[in-house]
Length: 375
Image (cartoon, rainbow, N blue to C red; front, top):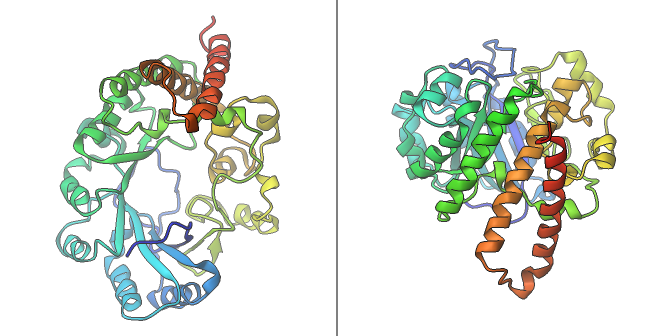
């Protein structure tokens, strides 16, 4: 079942706090063995699928590792599939992949058009095993490729894997996967200068790879819309936390998104969020960054991660600033090479965009030469 182009409402359920892995960068500390009640899930889903204001709904199962509760997920999905609803919908989960075997694999294979799976994969066997509990060989990669060839994988870079992430991205793409989210692990102090030279070398390697292999889609880590740096500063949220998404925990309480849950925060921290108007986008702007940083419009921002690091959802993690500058620098270098290779032959419809890119390339290069590459 395909959702329409319009952005769907994101309705999520934490089906369990448990996980069968212990990934090195995991920020979820609450790992009790409670689980969500299937009847409760059905009741909540009914409210959303019969409310026409949502139009379409993506229903996510979240954990922990969701497939630890396969029979609960199966019961809920089949109950929904047997009924008629006002709204279009699609089921989805992100998984570590290690439990997608046997009856789970068989069920998903039969229902791959109406239940999509996103895989967490950190790269080569060596890298993935460092980060994710020696789990690489427990994943049937070919099954995920066969069932959901258009679904991107999620890759996380940790301090243990930072010196090899270019090869990890290349491995994932050469395997045949699409890769969108390539994130530096949350809750890590990335301010240590030792990371700069490592990340610089890895991003330079990626630039060379994409120039030599234009058939591959550029990974998000250097696929930045640098022309947006020349636009007015964003005054809206990066995501739909609290207004276009909601997650229900095992006790039936709901929270703004999958980051803001009792798996990560204490209840008093979550209670403090009740006074926040998540529809007021101005509350989510880091004013310091907006006023002082040229890269503000292309700097990724997770409000849950902000809250984890700073105790404030709108204050960005400044230990990432130099990483973002490096990403912008190499994104600019890649874009500049593509413009040159094209001989400046630009379609009329693209002229304004390219002009903005050229201005951004010059400014980003100036900023990075001054702030990163000058002793």
